Image (cartoon, rainbow, N blue to C red):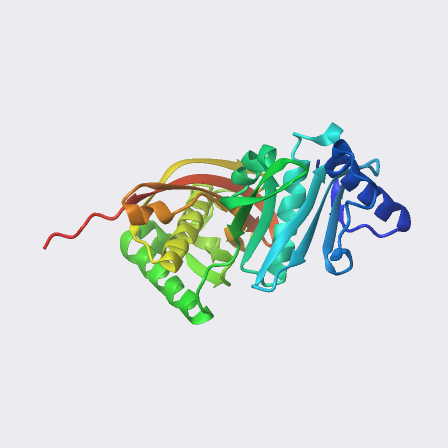
Amino acid sequence: MRHWHLRSPATPDEWQRYYQLRWQILRAPWQQPPGSERDELEAQAYHLMLLTPEGDIAAIGRLHQLEQGGAQVRYMAVATEYQGKGAGGRVLAALELQAVKWGCGYIRLNARDTALAFYQRNGYRQLGAAPQLYGIAHFVMQKQIRLDGSSEQHQQWCRQLNDTWQQTIPLSQYMQLTIASFDGNEIRCEAPLAPNINLHQTMFAGSIYALATLTGWGMLYLQLQALGLRGDQVLADASIKYLRPVAAQPQARCALQHCSGALEMLAEGRKAVQHIKVQVFSAGELAVEFTGRYAVLPAKAEAV
């Protein structure tokens, strides 16, 4: 899908094909007439389609804002010949990014029973049953895309995180790791090239791995702060893909929508697991992709 691209429909023909695919996948199998695939929010919603290099529409989705500071995904559909190939995931990720740009705190959707696993893999939690549609069971699902708390609280948590790194992970001091920014959705961490350079005058692979690992660890820490939870964080497993050398201005980025796994069970004294994706950039260009499986062990009760 390297040369596929995402955008909103722009011409009458594209809009016609966009709605045709929506009807074909979501309404026609249940003998619903053309036109039943639209509602009163079409004009004010954000529409997206994934185009193949040949101009075929592989997948579509729609997003609209909710009054409670959230956004709702509706009408996700993937053309039959492109199902199971990642097309739906690309559309969903782009809709989530749009919700972030709108300043939304969460995304909600109603998923049919056959799509539950797809949304769970993408970090959505099941909240309860939704009304059936055409006899198909649906479930309300939700994903947090911005941490609760004020900007002042976010800054305080970042100071605490930085102090934790400095006091408990000596490598972070040597790397000169710093938090460049955190807006409630995305944390960006930096480490200058000079103390992390190799003989090729690019960033040492071990430093890249440490930068990505600590950035993911930091996002996990911030989530725990927002939830008022405590625990011992460890990296259980990870994979990393080096796409190009990191030759200048190393920066790692981790967004909340790329964190999958609930943490609330810590309050019940149970271990929590979360998969976190981190990207490392070189002067603004994507250079490394890292995915870590982090575990949080319940904090031990202090002896009296």
